Image 1 (cartoon, rainbow, N blue to C red):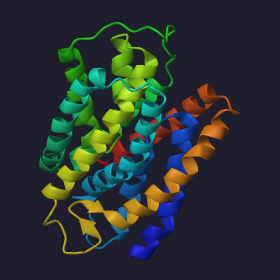
Image 2 (image 1 turned 180 degrees about the vertical axis):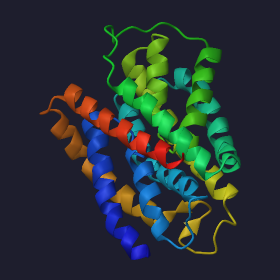
Image 3 (image 1 turned 120 degrees about the vertical axis):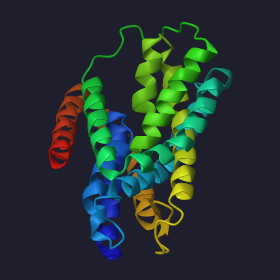
Image 4 (image 1 turned 90 degrees about the vertical axis):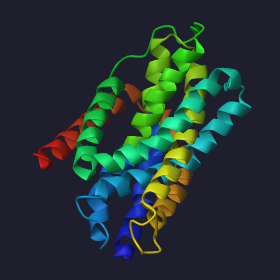
Length: 267
């Protein structure tokens, strides 16, 4: 059973890494729906818990990719610590709490929530960028913390890195796009760390199988991590040659179709 999962983990890691580098999306948007379909191969997984395990495992994989991204932005001077701190504090608290809410909601409700969120992100992906990417209107700590609360909760409860939520929010309040992306990278790392810890603690007695740490299926996560980390740079190179606008629209359509299928299954 485990071998069957590990066969797919490298493929999923490569796909998530390439798409992340190619389209600038978080791997979670690819990893979660794939794991929802793959994980029932395991004896401990059924319809009641598959979404929880998929989301927890996805968050664990995101730690590595978001750390790499945040470190890169810090070296380039894009990461404004004072600006990002209120967001990170809010993200940490809500990302830690979100797994408890996710467990309370249950597997079926989580699938519906993820599908709806995926459709909204797909629509946002097709929208044109703000015309003035260098704008930088000062934002209050309360406004930034609200963005952190929104990001920490939705990202952790859906197994996402958070950039797809925080960047549009910061762009909406007219934050400089480079500063917004760097803050999202750092916040995504915090979401992944605290969200993973929350899912590990909340699911501590989930299974006696040593392949599980709480709700996290760590062999699958490690397999995905390694290959997504190695393949992301190739996605970046590929993205420089292809029309990203058209690719994003095609991928957004694919996301919507997957989301619709997930919703239909719950009816």
